[in-house]
Length: 393
Image (tube, rainbow, N blue to C red; front, side):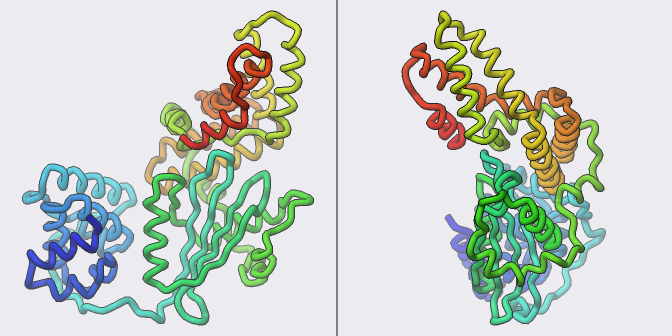
């Protein structure tokens, strides 16, 4: 059942506030504005008692608003179901991790029901987690001079530069739904950052654009309107370095993220991998089958590729940027471990904590299977197919 449908159920059950619930049309922020404090508590409490998933969705959205976050953290849970209380506790923990405090002696004060001011300016920015290849999406959401909002979406890669670039125009309601979908998607969700941070990232990738790799057409058309020359922003990686120490991290948890396919493997360039495969195929083609010896040589070659200066610096930057994401998600232990792993990569000491070993594992496994097939040691399946399977996990 959708949030809008659940809210209709709340309107039927809470007839005295139905006239404030229905005009919101399922929009959490309009609902927050249309209800007074008592009404907010009643609606959220009813959802947690009868539709806990919808209650979690509404409360998650309200955490993005200062007043909404204060309300969520102060919610009584006596009449909620067990599932509702559990969901609320997760949200309260999230809010407290961000520094939200409960309002002492909060009083229900009437609020003037109103729709959001359409003349109010929009200036938001988001960065996503990395995909398995090492690319990530960044977004700028700003007021459109012609009305509504403008969404800038760029696919950036440390090694490939600005890979794709799109600009969309939409109404404010559409933008709100779009942003919520970005935050809640299962793969590569986004976290909010500062517009200057996104501009700094785009400028950094522009400066390092691979020779011979053309910039997207839309980027060339919009480049002058992005404000990349303002020189006032730092990248998310630079920001987290000023906020979080590269020590005492939870490397085991980072390795778990990698093993679950949520992070990495950010493999070396495919042409370099193909050279390794060809070289090892020649090396082992005239010897008796020895999987252990092959595995040792693959590990040596893959480690060399990952620790080569350009690759090491690229993955160190990805680890720094990932530390920012974990920090924003209140997972400081994982963020600190990423910073530690990045420092060791740059210093040529990549084995501490096993983070690099975990990053290498799927690539090493894929190459081993491919080589054993090329050497007629096992049935045939290409490394490209194997790696594609890893990325689909």
